[in-house]
Length: 132
Image (cartoon, rainbow, N blue to C red; front, side, top):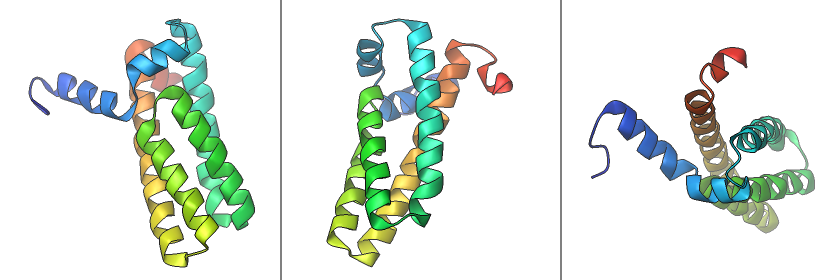
């Protein structure tokens, strides 16, 4: 049942909903150090893209969203990938209301994925958050 169990179990289940851990393990060949490296690179890319996307031209914003979508799919961040795709489509439609809504969703999903990744890194590589 969702949310049942200890707070740690509930938090772990919620993080699993944000990042597909089985997909991530397949993509990193089950290598914890490769997983750590991939996730750290993703965090940097996501922060960079999400930090600049609203201020860029529609074409540049679409390129950033497209890159983020691919990276999110690579680590199993399906909600973030869908949000990036929705943002790309909104930009293509040039509908200002859709663009604002999609950007808001993309930003929220980006924060959610980043928080889940940081918690995962800290859980798997104890003290990771203190080092970064």
